[in-house]
Image (cartoon, rainbow, N blue to C red):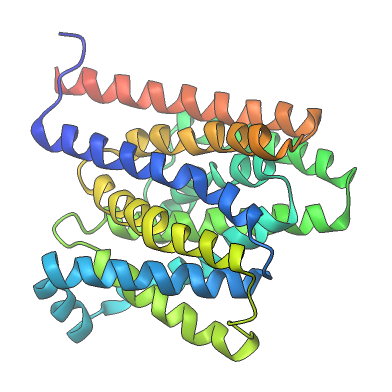
Length: 295
């Protein structure tokens, strides 16, 4: 057989794939909501936090109690980064094209490698180094394309970059604790984010259509995607996670283009193509190397 999968690997692949498929409509629904960035973030986190809390009470109660007693520095960082990532993600989707935001966000594994090098003293292989250079080159082209539109687009690209960094941090923490689920931490993070935002918004000034989109987003897509994407990477390699997450960067802009007719521009597509191509090549090489080692 060319590929050999164990039960844990199959479980991880299925969980992560389904999680990514559920996150694809996220960008479109955010675009359809007319509320401001912080109000959208508040209700997105509030509704998803309730659903995730119910799941925690049913399946992760013991781990939730342990986490509350001893969150540790990793748990605290996870909560903060998960909350900040939600704000940066919505800001990016609102302020720049969906394609630009998701192409930049797809580079989070690159930042995970850099973070691991700086804080965990892990070595960066030649493959990872070349991946970093290629991804940064692609981001530069996307930024040049956005500069032709407005300063608003550049701020959106910056928000996407910050989201990629926070995502890299909290997914790295999730992968570093394979015997401990971070699902309870995502629920705490959602409510912590709501609390911080509540001082700056008027949460009930929403249109009826906004309520519908936020309920669909917060009750169905976000909690399911969050739970699966946080759980799946515990069973598969970083390369496999990265490859699956790229599905969002490819399919979500197509969905937004089909529904809203959003044209991201030729430079964004070229830069995004470079980013996606570099990441796919890098991850396929990593998976092949791991298969060779297992043999």
